[in-house]
Structure formats: C-alpha cells, structure tokens
Image: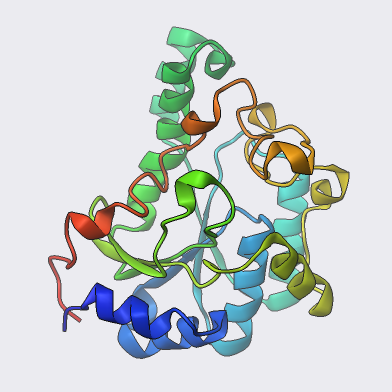
Amino acid sequence: MKLNLEKTNKELEGKTALDIIKWAYRTFEHDFIKLSTSFGAEGMVLVHMFANIVDSPKIFTIDTGRLFQSTYEVWQELIDKYGVEIETYYPDANDIAELVSKTGPNLFYKNVENRKKCCYVRKVKPLKKALDDAQAWVSGLRRSQTESREDIQIVSFNETHDCYKIAPLVNWTEADVWEYIRNNAVPYDKHHDRGYFTIGCEPCTRPSRPAEGLRAGRWWWETEEQKECGLHIEDGKIIKKKQNPSWTI
C-alpha cells in the first residue's frame, strides 16, 4: 500500500494528536514506527501519549555530547516514570575528533558553515542510523514554531530517510503543549521555567523573550532564516518531490 498524501492529510487535518498516532499504528508496522525526542516540551507530550496507548513504543534520541545536564535529568525521569526504553544514538567519535582538531571545540560561533558542519556530525549523521529501517518517523514539529515550519503537513514523505514523517502536534499552539503537560503531570526540562522556550545543545541555546520568537534562543548569533540544524530541512517541501517510499506497507 502506498499513501495518497493529499487525501491522507485532508482526512487527518481535523483529528486529534491521539487519533493521528492511532492511525499510524493502523497503517504501519508497529516495530517500524519511530518517535524521535530531544526531551523538549513537545517530545515529552508525545512520549506520554505513546506510553499510554502503545506497548513498548520505539522511541529514540540523539545524544550530541553537548547537552544540558537538565536534559539528562528529565531523560532519566521519563524512563523511571513510564518504563519506556530510549534507544540512543551518538555521533561517530572519529568524526568528532576530526571536526574539533581542525576547527576547535567552539567552531560553531565562527560562521554558519562551521555550525552546520557541527550539527551534521552531531545530529544529522546519527539520525540516518536511527531511521535506517523506519517506515514512519514521528516528531513534535508544530506549524506555529517558526515561519519555516508554517507549511508542514501532518503526513509527508522524507526522501532522505525513505520513510513517511508524521507530526501529530502540527496544529498545536505553545499554550496547548503546556496545558497538556500540566494537566497530565508530564515531566519537563526545568530550563523551560527559566526562559528557555526551546532547548538544544548547551553552547547553542540561551533564554529568550516571547517577543523574540520561540526559537530565538537557538543559535542566537545567526539570522532567523538560518536556524535549522538539518534534521527537518525537507519538511513542507518533500511532498512536491516524492510521495512514496521504495518499500510498501
């Protein structure tokens, strides 16, 4: 079976996040549906949903080696509370050694090209391993996060990873996310209480004010249009390129 993406998105547009997740489990093989999380607010919401409706969900994260200690704390809290396993992917040690030896540990501050090299080695390459056998990749992207994400579809096809990508929270607002967290006692990174609207690697994240935009605290020394690490670079565009994978479901 191959998905008609236009029809699928039309059918799912008015559905709840839980409805979309349940649709995914009716559509794809359970062991090949993978939820990615970096333990941000949206990711924690999705982990809570998955843990409550699926036995042994496939959840993974990428440890870049430059994360906040608070990220590890909420990571542990999540495992202890929900009893889920988090498959962890790391950058290649040789890649890190080469990157740092050539340009230094803080290369990302020098220019956008260096920062993207760092993101590629620490995030993008490990993601390829994580999604190597995936049929569906579930993420916490929302349309209201940035202008570059306004056109994200609920279901799209990611050509790079040869899998469908699902965004159950695509229509949620920031207020929706935090209402769900509070109503369901979902663990969250306490840096969110200190003005961090989004949390990534420690050297590349600072607090921000609401008027600055939700992702203003990420790579704050760069212009707004450059603020993507490469993990979601195809979102909103891939539908026009290719609608089906090389495998069938």
